[in-house]
View 1 (cartoon, rainbow, N blue to C red):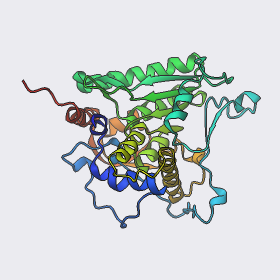
View 2 (view 1 turned 180 degrees about the vertical axis):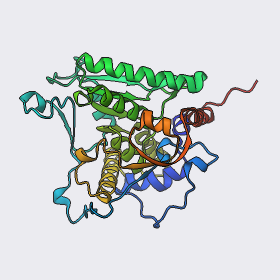
View 3 (view 1 turned 180 degrees about the horizontal axis):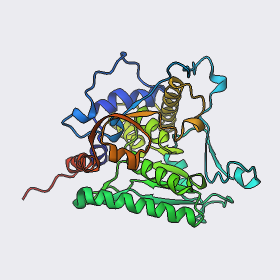
View 4 (view 1 turned 120 degrees about the horizontal axis):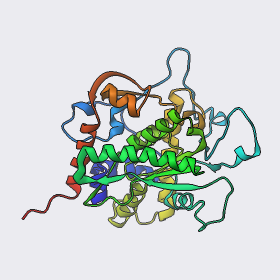
Length: 333
């Protein structure tokens, strides 16, 4: 419950989003249109992904029919060191291939163990986990420091030969809050791009925030090669234990259905822009920011279109800490 509150889960998320995805393997069918107020105008703490709107194909770049043109689509993604894209060498084939960018807890655990000696060695595949946590008591300054440290740690990891960086927010507690996963992912991605080392590593995000298709779309759109929504899986287990989901469904089937639904949803989003492969969508930044100030965008979401200014890092930190305080309220004496 504390994790769900920390990452902004609501009862509507459970019943309207997660339950249909887990039981039916597809997003729930709803009415067209979205009359939800803009995140920047809301008086409730919003997920950072809500400040981004998906773009769609116009004029010269037509959308595609992902159902009838399935043969030309692919959700396969590869993670690792791509090396020099202008030179084809055997070493560049040492990549981890995933059938979907949405991965289970077991798959994420195996990725995190690469290069540790606890699993079979795979040449060229070495993973390192970087924590997105920071002391909640430090507020916005603590989030800023953690972002700076994350970028420095990522640079050091790549320089030491690490080919897979895992950004994780596991371990959230009363004392430790988490940098929004989208912010951490975009910060590390653009930092490595500026350094010229981005193709030397892949990014995996282990986060409790991701639970709906838009979350997965923004994370992969800003550089993540794979996303592990561990709290979503735990929520599915909880819902089945509390009979919100029929007990007749096998646990593994529910998790597989959720992955299937999220993957199909990603393909739907990609097809609106005429993009047919996950490899092309990753890092493409097919979004428009609404309600984020320009210095914040330039530093963390470089070259993202934005026609309306708004909040910055201080306000993002404040919204994050409001959710954290809701999960772990101060003890009343």
